[in-house]
Image 1 (spheres, rainbow, N blue to C red):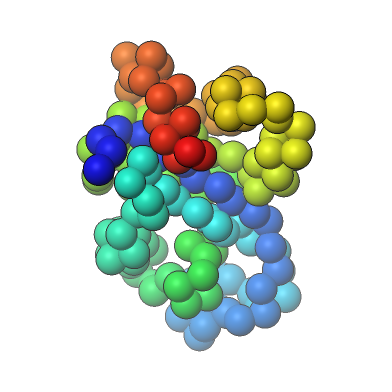
Image 2: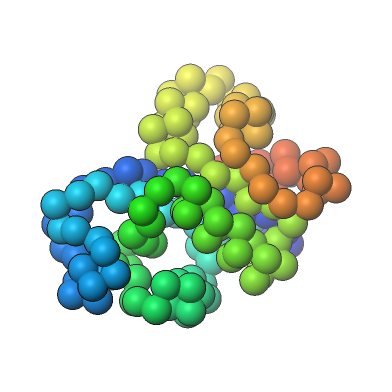
Length: 146
């Protein structure tokens, strides 16, 4: 098992018509676009859903929307990033990289090898966390995309 020292958060901006009553009461509309996390993974795989669900409920007082597929909704990118940072803190990870699904897809298409992909993610993805962890980020992403 790999060390759980970094996270990768991949998000998208989506219109999902399935909004629960609790979400409508909290100001979410079924006809609007919101940010959703598609993946929140560390070097050993997806972050446990129970951790995410529990923190989302603690933070917003509503259950996660969209069943087990997506994490959200979030009203804006800053809110999504803040949530990713809080999960990073909760599981004692050193850093979280936040990247759009479109950018990840483009990087996968454009990369000639794993090292190139990692360099693109590190260079352009938003990262939040302990700055002393910088030296470890390349090995983490190599493990994820191995």
